Length: 393
Image (cartoon, rainbow, N blue to C red):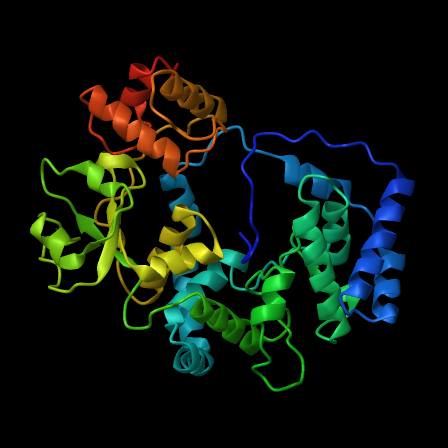
């Protein structure tokens, strides 16, 4: 997912009928808004004159998958052998550039390569949609008009500064751009001209793209002294309630019997870490540090953040997980999650919004439900939880 793209989690949003005349009026107003924000009239008028509504963008914005993606499927699709080998090759090919970014921002080269790999498969696909068209389509839609109006104005400011001609500004359906898929507002704030040609070009200049990614991560608090986290092994009879997001010193996790992935004691350090078990007690466990939160500042998905960290480790030469994700866990349908949330709420376990999204509130409610039903309180909606809640599996 794009850096800076905030998604909301409702299940469906019926499209509002919009006539061509209404869209044209909206685009004209967008042009005025851009001019008021400092965009030149020449640029604003040029872009407005060429804007077309893309119905496919609205379809993609409304689309919600019927089933959630399992962690096994997510990780294996994104951290596969081809991508690992390509990442290692590019790490060496661009070593001088990446080392320069590390010196200036503190972000190690394997992480830069990992973000690059996950966002655009190392620059092989940026997206083919006109960014001004996509953003105008979304800005003139009621669902997230304010957010995408801001992105539209930022996109025109990027064109106005000469970073890229309007006809070449292509990206994802939501307006993410270039090698590292920056949203326009992130581009304006964090993109840099690293190759000295006078332009911030995230499409055609790898130095600009990598340095911009490093500066963005640095701005969110990347700590160059530590890694993202690590796979760990949990002792028998571990209290899985401790995976509720709390941060404890590494020394405390060590006292609780957690070891590294090879069974060796954890370091005697006071760095604070949280425990994440993305597939419950049957799957891998990770202790994650501050940099994990920084990765989530790029993309608010634990699966994504683990994938970035694991791909960075693999690119740097590490092996695979010692405890692979279970392959027999079913992908839950959104209706099953909705039904579970409603069942939890009905039984007095507050899951937060009943929205079909398995967030932290729902996981917390599941833990309480599991404790009340003598199940392992790992917060994972496995088959036992669904059956105990009366959800059809």
